[in-house]
Length: 437
View 1 (tube, rainbow, N blue to C red):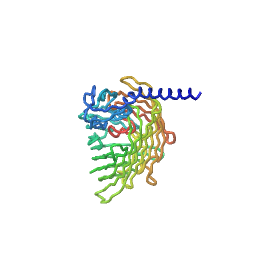
View 2 (view 1 turned 180 degrees about the vertical axis):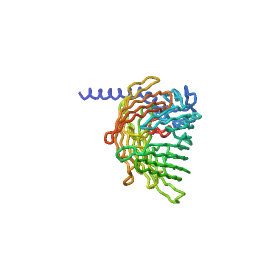
View 3 (view 1 turned 90 degrees about the vertical axis):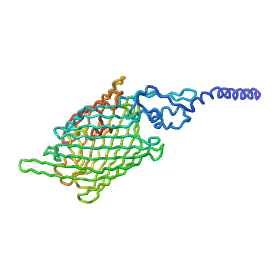
View 4 (view 1 turned 30 degrees about the horizontal axis):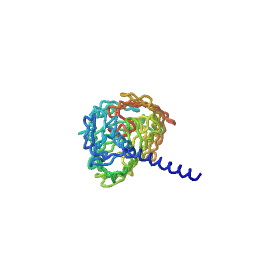
């Protein structure tokens, strides 16, 4: 018996030695020393930029099959490709096949929300020089106000693309109705706004999810007016404010788009210092914004977006307006105003149709907001609101940000409201060009 056991043990060991020696080349083949990178079907993309993006600018490097999925995610996150495939070819080549989106975007669109109509005409190039740099501008007009516009630049530069910059110039005029705490329209507010904003930040380290930077607004000029009309009296309040803003910016995490399906989380904190030259005094403000996207299955995508912001200044130019095209759907434009505001958007999205040139995504959502208002303010509207609604997204994956959005929403508490918002290339923040999800 002992002799048979000895032979069985020897045979067992030889068996595994044979299996491991036979399979060793397979395990070894999972990693490859890459000396060359080949890119196929790229009409605009710069190979040097792509190597910087993937941290493959210094070759040779050892690349394993497990990293290919990470590389694809990084490339899709740039939002300039609608399909990406990576393969490793012996002896030393990493082959990348891409299908680029149409990234020169002529912008001709209208958005309706609450009682406001926004019309936009412009053009952007979001893959300038094949390096995912954005440059462009647009004219904007609300209802019958004087046309305004925005010039916009955005991109990542430097070694391993660690530095991010954003430059915006705004000139805008807007009018909304003014509302009482019970939701009745009692007048009109209007403002004209002109500002220049520069944001710069960089990664703490190449592998870090944290980015730190600064915000500089050399000037922000706002002319604000409130006109309250009644049968017995008429009150007009005006304010002209000029200020310079300095701030810090901290960004944690990243959102990874796969066309209109998203994953990941992102948190943005901006503490600000505002200087009023006319009054010769400083005041402080802050903004905290977060995005979280969860994709538990191929077709389902859940989105959570939240914003909290405020200012210690009592000036009218720091007032936050919610409703209409922004923030809380189902409310008239400018329905709520206050010096501090917090609002949340929660969405459940389902990919109902996915064809080569059309994706359709029905949505159910709930929005909520709470504001801090001046004591006894009769023109600030309600201080809180919760709405819910249904929507649908129509997307063409070959064109960057070509998404038609239609949402209908209604309030869940008094005062009862209902509105439909519709437009192109927008989601949570249609007021900001090429931003928000």
